[in-house]
Image (cartoon, rainbow, N blue to C red):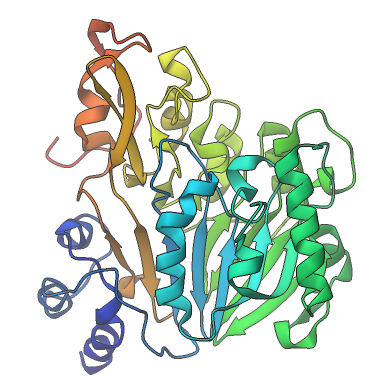
Length: 402
C-alpha cells in the first residue's frame, strides 16, 4: 500500500477535476479503495505536471477548442517532453499553447516532436504563418513522414518553419531513417534510432509502414506509426493510417500486440480501424481525437467521426471510448462543445493497476453519452425519428448496467 500511496501523491497535481476518475476506477483496472479515495480530492488538470521519476508515463490528448477535428498529443515520458502532431487549425493555439506553457515550464523545450503526416489537421500549428510551434518553443529533435504528395500553403510553411528550427540546432529524421537505423539509443545521442529509451522500462518504438517507401494516392497512408512501451504495456499511435497501411504495419511489426491504449487512426473513420488491426491490438481504451458527429468532412451522418463501422470494430474489445469534443446544433447552425475534453492517461509503473485516466470534461464513455443515443440529425438540421446517431453492436462487450 505504501508504494501505491506514494504514486498517487506524486501525480496528484496533474489530475483532472471531473468525477470521471471515479467511474474509470469502477469500470476498468482494479485499484485499492485507498487509491480511489485519494483520487476524489484531485485538483484541476490545468496545473503543471510535477517532477516525476524515470518510470512515469503521461499522455494528454488536447481539446483543440474549435469545430475542426485534428490531432495534438503531449506525452511526458520520464524526463522527456514529446509532442505528437499539431492540429487542427491555427486557432487551436489559443487552447494548446497555454497548456504547453504549463507543462513545459520555463524552458519551453520539446525534446521530441513527431509529425505523422502532412495534412492540415495534423500540422496546422507547426505550419502557422506566425508564432508556429517552432517559433513558440525550442524543439530538440523532429521526426516526421518520409513521403508526401502535399503542395499546400500550410505544408510549405511547415517545411520552412522546420528548416528554421534545424538551422537553430534541431535534429531532423524521417520515420524511415529511424526504422532503417535498426538500433536502440537515446535522444541525447542525436542519432536516428528505431527504439528510443525514454526512462525506466520505458521506450518509444517506430513501426514499419511500407508507405514510408512507396507512393500512394492516399496521403493518410504515409502516416508515421509508433508505440510507447512501458514494461509490457503498449500505447499505440498510427496517425491517420488507412486499411492498406494498417495491413503493412500488422505484417511488418512482430512486436505489435495487445494494448492498453489505441489512438484511433484517422479519427475513427470507416476506412481505418480494421477488424485485423483491432484483433491485433485488442485495446483496453480507444481515444478518437475528433469532433464527434461534426459534418466537417461529410454530408452523410454515417460518415461523421467516429463511423459506425469503426465502433463495430472497437466494440468487441472495449466500451471505454473517449473523444475531446462533440458537435452541437442550435437554431440553424452547427458548432461544437467539450465532450471528454483533455483526456489524460498516467501510469508511474509497469502494471496497469496503477493506471489513472482523467478528463477535463464529461465523465462518460462515448457509447453512454447523450450524443450516441439521441435522435440523429442531418446536416440541414432535420431529425431522423427512430434512428440514433450510433448503435452498440450485439457482439460488443456488455455496457455498464446492461
